[in-house]
Length: 175
Image 1 (cartoon, helix red, strand yellow):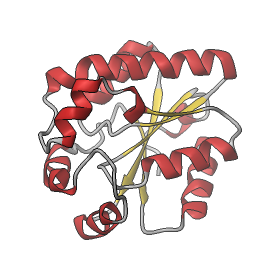
Image 2: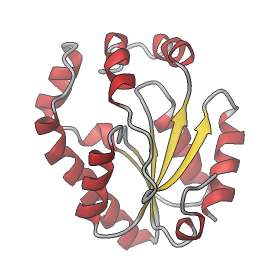
Image 3: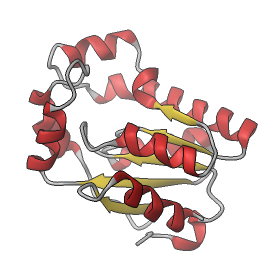
């Protein structure tokens, strides 16, 4: 299932990605515990202005994302330098966003897409009261999501599985 299987075994940076409500933080934290590495939630690294925009129901522009993605990338490299490997939850919806993460880090990243249809994700979002990403932005998230390119170390996982099964599948794929 990995687009570049041999590369995944040596990768220090693992990004669990997908639209808001896919389970990035839940799966990312569980995966990090399983493989005994630090976990970073990229949402916690957003500048205050980005959070305010999203809370107001306004999608972020690329100009809002570039500095945030660079912060995320540097945080991942710092954590991997200290601990050998890191798992990060980050939307990384566009190929260009994933490319910024790779270029800023200066090393390969294995991207794990948590994929599900809009109905499943909308139901999950409804069960997350208080999250800064309102359900109204779900449509824009799906519109922004771009498929993996051939050059990406990538794995796609169905979000309808149990978290334990998702983590087991990812852990087996990344080694």
